[in-house]
Each structure stands twice: as C-alpha cells, then as structure tokens.
Picture 1 (cartoon, rainbow, N blue to C red):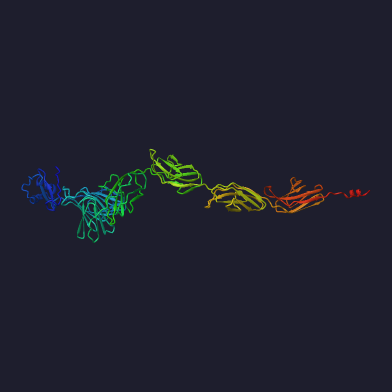
Picture 2 (picture 1 turned 60 degrees about the vertical axis):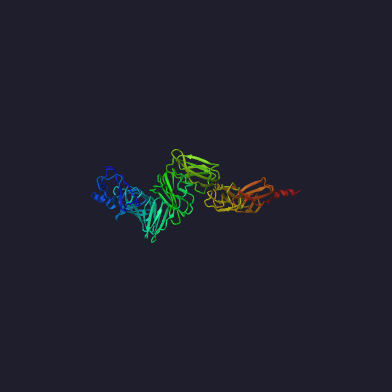
Amino acid sequence: MRIPLLLAVLMALPAQAADWLYLTYPGDTLSQIGQTYLKNMRDWPRVQAANGVLIPKHLPANTRIKIPVELLKVTPAPATVTAVTGNVRYKSGSGPFQPLAAGVLLNGGESVLSGPRSSAAYRLADGTLLTQQASSKLAFGRLAAYGKTGMVSTELSLDSGRLEAHAAKQLAPAGGFKVITPVAVAGLRGTDFRLNVAEDGKTLRNEVLQGTVAVAAQGREVRVDGGYGTLAEAGKPPEPPRALLPAPSAEGLNPLIERLPLSFTWPPLAGARAYRAQLAPGGATEAAFTEVLLDDVTSEPGITWNDDLPDGHYVLRVRAIDPAGLEGGNRDHAFELDARPLPPALLSPLLGERMYQNEVAFSWAAAAEAHGYVVQIAPTPEFANGLIERRLAAVTRHGETLAEGDWHWRAASLDAAGKPHVWSPYRAFRVQPLPNPPAATARADAGQARFAWSEAKGAARYGLELGAAADLSAPRVKQETAATTLAVPLKPGKYYWRLRGVENDGQAGAWGAASPVIVPPEAPSGLAAQVEGSQLRATWKGEAPAYQVELSTDASFVKPLLSQQANDARIALPKPQPGDYWLRVKGVGAEGVAGPASQAIAVKVESFTPWWLLLLLLVP
C-alpha cells in the first residue's frame, strides 16, 4: 500500500480549528481514507457529509478533505531515552524509583529526577529532542500520536529545574507541545527554547532561541519569539518579553587543549551578571546538545573544571546570564583534548624545599599511559639558560649533582612515539648544604684549653662540645659562640672535643671529628731542698699524679744535669758534686704530658773535708 502524502495546514487557513486537512491523491476513496486515518473506519460517511462529497469512490486529486480531529486514530507516542549522564532515576505511577538508562521507552505517567551534574536526553515521536538538565524534576503526561497524520500531542510537567528543547514543527490542529509548571503553562509554537523553574517552584524563566513559545499565567498569555525571554512569578502574569543577551565571543578559546584541569576564558559581555558553561561530547551542535557532561554557572568570564575527562573531541557551550536570570544565546566551541599521558605528579624536591646535599634525588609518581619521562632542571623558571634535560625510561627516580643555589624542575610524560606532552607545573627548590665543620686547632695551658678555628661558609655561630669520652656521649661542655676562638677553663686531664657550624635559623651542620686535647697539671709550688748526708732531698706541693724533677747547673735548664720522675711530692736524689745548682719540678699528667715548671730554686753543695785531714793540716 502506498504511503499517502500528508499536508498539514496551519490554523490560519480557512478551516475549522478542530479539522485536519487531507490532500487527496489520484484514486483515493473515502473508505480508504477512513480505513487509514479514522478510529472507526465506518465513520467515513461523516467525512463525506462534512465535505459535501457526491461520489465517495471518485475523489478529485489535490482536493482538501476536512476530517474532524475527534474521528482520527489516537496511538501511543512513547518518548525514547537517548542518553543519560550521572545519576538520573525514574518511576512509573506509584512504583519505586529506579535508574534511568538509554533505550528506555516512556509512555506517559513517569516521573524523572536528575541529580547534580546529571542529565537525560529524550527523543519524542515527532523527532523533538529534549534535554532534562541537572537537579530537575520532570513528569511525562500525555504522549499521543494521531495515527499517520504526523500530529503528536505532548504534555510535560516541570516542577523544578531546567528543560531544553529542539522541537519538531508542530502540526495543526491537534499537534502540540505543552509544558506545565507551578507558575505558568508554556505552549510550544516553534523550535528551540529553554524553561527554568526555580527550586522553590515560584519563578519560571523562558528563553526562546528560534520559533515562538506562548507562556500563560493568571489569565494572560505572552508570546515570546526567538531571541527573547520572559519571567513569570507565582501569582503574577508573565512579564513582557525582553531581548536575550547575545552569545559571548569565542575569542581566546583554544581548539587544542593539552592540559588538565580544563580551563577556559572568554571576553566579558556587557550586561552579563554571570555565565553558564556546559560541556558535551564531540559532535554536539547548536541544534543538538543533548548529552551534557558538565554544567556550571560562574560569575566570571571563565570556567575551570577539575574533572578527569578522557582525551577526545568535545564542545564547550557558553551563554551569558542577564540580571533577571535569563540566559542568552549559545556560543559553541569545538575543541580536542589531548592531555594524555598526563604529566607525572612531582614528589621530591617539594616546592620551596631546601636540599642539604649537592646530590639531589628527584622523584615523581608514575603517570598512566606514560612510556617514559623528560625531566628539566634549570636555575630560572623560564628553563632557558643553564638548562639540564634528561630523557628517561619509565622510571620514577633520577639523581643529579647540582651547584649550590636556586633551582627549578618540571617533568613531562612521553607517549608511545616518544613525544613529550604537557609539562607539569614547575617546582622551585634551593641547594644549600649545611655549614661544613670548620678547620680548628686546640692549645692547652695549665687550667684551660684554648680553641681557634676558621670561618665556615653559611655559619652564623659555632657549637663546641667537650667531654672525657671519645664518643662525646656525655659532654661536659656545650657552648655556642659567634666568635672564632673560645677559652674553656678545665682541670688537668685528657679531653675530646668537636666543632660544628650553626646557621641563623638554628640549623646546624655536621660535627667535625672528635679530637683530643690534654690539659697539663699546674706548676708545683713550695719547692724546698736540702743536702742530708749523701742525698739531696726535695719536697713541694702539687696535685699531679706524677712529677718530673730536674737539676741543672744553669738557670735555663737547657741541658739538665739530672731528670728523674717522682710519684709523690718528694724525692731523694744522690748528692751531686760540690757546687752551685738549680732545681725545679714539673707536674706530669695524662699521656705523660708535663705541665709548667715550678719556680726554680738555687741549691749549693758544699765541699766536705774530713776532721782528721784538718788536724794533719794544722800540725806543723
């Protein structure tokens, strides 16, 4: 059976508003028309009477036949779910809510809830495309088609949220598209429009891009043509239409994005208080933006999304929002996202970190899909002069020996072809080793030790530790000084000491190796001597563990005549030959180190003549 050509005639033509006009083909009969289009095929005589047809089996071609709408077949016209993004649930009648998925048929009587950053797209029987936006509550009412006439009647209820439509042309007289909201009823007479019901259900905003929408409330209907919008508040008639803001400029929008997060800026538009930015998969156009991946409102002419989107083709849609909350024309910008493999996440050195060694270990987290990495290190963030660049395999560590100073580093992932992708944000750090232990010397006198050292780079002051144990586990002395010399009073004995540099902020460098220093005993005092028989006896005062006694023929003790050790503060020496001598004593301490000598005393050894020899000399 051939498919007849249908002619939909607008209500402006001379026909009853409730009559559908059919244009006859050669060979058409009223009974054939009745069989194809009427609910009851036997009602064709009513069509004959309404049109004054004399011969029902011989209708002239190209004749307009009026058919009352109430006689036409009415069939279900389900809406098909074409796309779902995020969390969208629906229920039929009083049944439970369940997840909505692409391919589901809605026959009327369903309620659909979309969560934040979620959306659903529908295709109606007449080809109309609907997009239920995020955080919206939409109910499907009457979804009916009038047989093969092409007329489809659609009734929806939008309780809150946003609805966008790219509608097919509505065929008169029964075809129509109506959206009921808590504030007003919107009747579609055109193609592209948007409806936005506030969350509290008290405000409706309608924007028409093409065609016409009639918004009726409180007994008043406002006709809104393409490029205009209106606002309706609860209990008030719709406001007069006002011109929508034009689409923002696409200047500055890049067709190739190589970095995440996604970030866009566009020139500000006069009269805009905010902007809506949406993102859809590639292929979405001005006419069909049905799958919405991201949707946000920003007060600035720019948007940044931190969502981890896969590489591919996308469309950014931007429109301005006027002070009344009406959204203007769409600016669609197609672009390619080619950010993978993503740059690795830098781990060490951290931003602003100080490295205490010239050997710097760089580390980063492995990036998905990376076949290797490029690491750049430079003294400046421009990565120009002094640049160090290393192409590495799929490793996550690398070491470099760097001079002291400020440095910057960044890394990029390599794809399978060895091409580096976008650089990571750079990190600045500083190589500044702690002060080295200064070169130092120690000199001990009786009762104290004197330390001296050279200045160490980076040191503001110096720390000294001194103790009896070589490991300095329990130092007796702990001092800091900004000078390069230090005198420490000490009792005689053997000590160990070490030195380190300390910075202004208190950070200290490594300790130098522990070195010994020996403090000798103090000079003995009270030295006295006398000759007794064949011995020269001497006594003195002192606290040394041992003593060194020296006898010399001259006060300089350049070549002592005798040097003998004593374990206490006394000694008996063989009496020397008669003559004049000098005697002194030194304390001997740890490691056999002798201290300063006592004050030298003069010793006179008299010659001795026997008495009997004297008698012989006296007898003549």
